[in-house]
Amino acid sequence: MLCTLVWLGALVAPVQGQVLPLEQKNTLTSNWMVHREGADQLVPYVAGVHTEYNALHQWLPVTQAQPFLVAFAAPKDLCLFLNNQLIFKADSAANYTLDLTRYSKGMEPVEGKYLFTVWHPVQQPNVNTFRNVPRVSGAAPEANQRPFSIQVREYVNQNAFIIFILAIGLIYGLLRINYPVDFQGVFNLNGFLRTSAQSELSTAKSVGAASNVLFVLAFSLSLALLIAAIHTNVQHIKLFNRLFPVSEADITTKIIFYTVLIFLVVLLKYVFLKVMAFIFGLEQVVQLQYREFIRSLLFLGLFLPLVMLLYLALNAVMPEEILLISSLAVSLVLVITTLRVYYTVNKKASVLNLHLFSYLCATEVIPLAIMLKLIVFNF
Image (cartoon, rainbow, N blue to C red; front, side, top):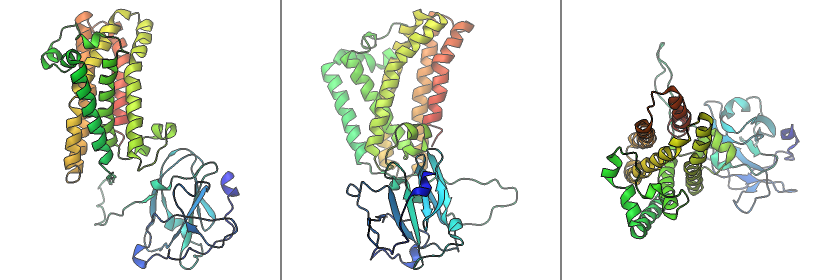
């Protein structure tokens, strides 16, 4: 209902110098504008200056000869107008695609163009998420041929990835110099391959120990970089969009958000295991299970920066292959960790015990399935 209250006055004339050439018809541009009170023309929108405007405008030359598909990420209650007529209201935070050509039928253009307006009742819309959906040319599909979707990936500025990789290297360097015994214990291949129930010295320390916190931080940042590379648009994950909507171009915010989230998940899993173990009456396996979980994650996480370097080097020339490799790397880290936890706990008490098996499913398998769905199978 609030969408109907937005007031734009009359259709104002386009700002001088904003007339689009003919070949750019049915194309959304980045030249957004705002309408100042009392003015008879739209003025160019300047990010960081015009922060008080909840309505942003753009003049679009829409031709009926072809579709005008616009994709965008919308928070709840975001409204779109065409020539001051409401054409869309978001009932929930999600990704949407609209054909503006269909809505422009029956409307009278102003000097050959239509006024496209994005408005939100309580905040300035994030127009950086608006983009054209490319049209795919080719022959019509055959009678029994199933349709397929085209995945368009965003190629983001890689400077942020490089800076964070350097930060990871710095953290590992500090750990290697200041905690040599702990470093050797975590990244010792022979120790990782041993199936003894006794953990290495560093992983037997308190969760809040400085070395353990730095190890988990380095792993969280490594995994966050790879997830950000897989999900070039955080808005694709509807849950994260509701919790923490960020700009599509703000890759640094995405990486920091993922890092904090992973860091908290790793540390809070100990609390989760204590609660579940109390419910199932298996408190004796919590310490062993969590130590093996941490030990496996930290060792496997050492290889994630290498995958990230591969992404930086080859993503421009073979994006689909690099996407597959990155997804497999994340999947293997999670799956191998779960399998090692199962194997280690099995040496203390047989997982053939239905009670213990149910506990491990609740604490390992179900969280693994959720993480794989959110990280790997959601792009």
